[in-house]
Image: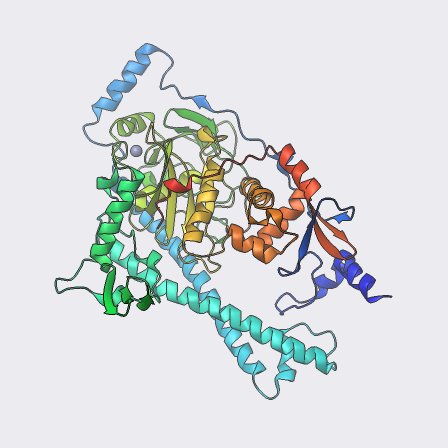
Amino acid sequence: MSEQTEVESKRKLRSKEEAKTIDSSLFNFEDDPQVIDPDEPISCVGHCSGEVLKLEVEVPFKSLVVSDGIQEAKNTKSGRRSLRASTQAKKFTSDPLDDTLYELYHRRMEKEEKKMLNRDRESFCSEADKLKWQLDALLQNDWAKSLPSITFIRDTRDQEELQEKREWTISSIRQLLEKYEDWKRREDRVLGRVRAHLLTPNVGNGHGQTHNNGIDFRFYTESLNKFDYIGDSGTDSEEENMDVEEIKQRRKIKNCGKFGPSIRINLGHNNQLIAQPFQKTRIENS
Amino acid sequence: MHHKLEVEDGTYGLLKGPNISKVRLGNHEMGTWYGTAVYFARDHKTLGFKYLNGEKQSRSKSLVNQEETWLEKLYVCDWCFKYTDVEDEFLGHHARCSHRARQPGQIRYLAADVTIRRVRGSRHKLFTQNLCLFTKMFLDNKSMFFAVDYFDFYVVYDNLTNKPMGFFSKELLSTDRNNLACILVFPPYQRRHLGTLLIAFSYELSKAERLISGPEKPLSPFGLMGYLKYWSSTVARELLYGRSCAEDEITLNALSRITGIRIDDITLTLKYMEIVKVENNKLHVDRGCLKNWARKNKLSKAPLLQKECLLVE
Ligand SMILES: [Zn+2]
């Protein structure tokens, strides 16, 4: 069998049976015929008579029917009854569906849901612990012993396969752990902000006030993601009758007050020191 | 996140079929598509909040036609999504709803006809909880209704009426950095391309954060339909009119970087469009097929969203 046809048959017909027998808790670097390598060049041609790549399952669009049974609601059948409806509405001196009515039930259900969220969070964290432990094992001298319990190996006597898969596994684990660390960082930030909101619900500018003594340089670094900080106030009624440009201008001024202005200092010889919130302070030559 | 955890009676929110016959949303009345247990107390007939407030529904189950029907009609305010099973309470509230004069959240997209507002769950708890509860009647894979603190909601409003027409939610602590958790255009406002607008907007949010992102999986059938529409027209525009139009070669990586769509989703889209072919073990985009696809699907050059209306920076 020539090499080319072998590869081709791999893309087309790697048997699914085989893939199924691999324990899904293991890292699996076997070729998946459905996956296209993201860096594989795909040439653009006017016409090609090859075999079309199709979805394995058909999209069930035809069975989706948007319900058409939407009607205008009538409070009542006759004019007299609709009069009754409007008097009914007036008979309440205050909102018959006041916020407080829902409080007890919604708070109780929220507590239940948060328990589920915590279970999810814990399992995500213990997954990360397992990865750390696996990474540790792969960095030991006897890594070849632990590898088959972490990654699918075709032939445990094949040194080349073992070496290659050890490297791939280590780099996969490192990527996953990076994702986990990124999530941890975001969690700390979001939890802090949500707590601040809960202390001052429905009020804009709950935090982020400028300090009286000059500029607060906390934000003059690129290591903060500005999207975690900007536009964090609640409902902003002042913007209601503005157009897009006016809103942009207003927010710029507001953010400047919160995070500090753009600063340019001439250093001579056409060099400028430029400091801006959420960016690395730099020197530019103009 | 997709939960199938037990809270009250075996399945959380999941039921075999619709259990509320009709829902009245403002002045529209419609049937429901999916069952929802979360509005109700354990007796399966009293609304949960009324039950805890000491009220008990006296109507017996024999009053309702089918076994599966827990309630004949639910009344929902189309400004704030507060709900009740009593028409008079609904009318009394609707006439003086505080959301009528003032919409929650901050403007993130302002066009001539519609506005998208970001509403934080932690700040507008009751509004976003009620929105989630309403959504369950039209989405099968929704499973978070009350713990809204860690979600942002992007709600699209009609500028003429100031009424919400649809929304998507975004999980702030998504482990996969998804840009969308669930999406719904309310039944009276479907077929106005609002789903495509919301999806396009969700990608603009990610692009502003320099992220390649996408929706939480699995998608509901309607979600998948909306996404394939967005993905395929975005990929087709890029290949026909974008930077890639004169290229002899493309890669999934490049397409993903340009469009902000994840590689897996682009792969799915190319297969769905059936424009990639294998010849001599090499992959090819067949431009003839691509043009046919564009003609058949009436691909237009008009943007899916007006960039000048964005207020996300
Ligand atoms: Zn209302």
